[in-house]
Image (cartoon, rainbow, N blue to C red; front, side, top):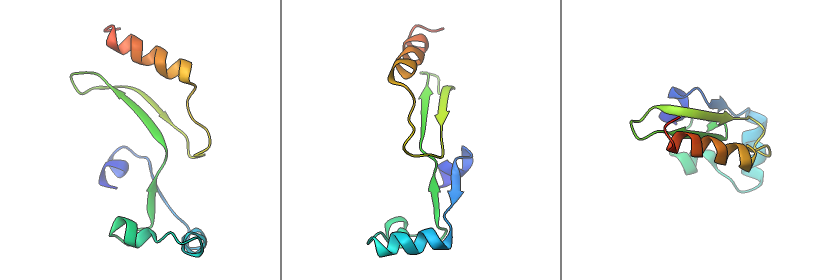
Amino acid sequence: MSAARAFGIAFEVSEETVKQYRDYGVDLEAASGEDHHQLPVPSVFLVEKGGRIRWVYSNPDYEVRPENAKLLEAAREIAAGR
């Protein structure tokens, strides 16, 4: 979670949601080894060879993802050095 916090994509899960997860058999504390009840926002980062982040997509709605065509276009531009 330290990387998610550093990138500003961590969010706190409400106690109600933690309880719902437990009811579904998901134990966030056991899975993470921590009791912070944080999860990362689903995100995509495209990074150039030098390590610079060139493209970011982040959406708190985990069902919404970037369009494949836009992701591919951005990757091609980065690969071409643009």
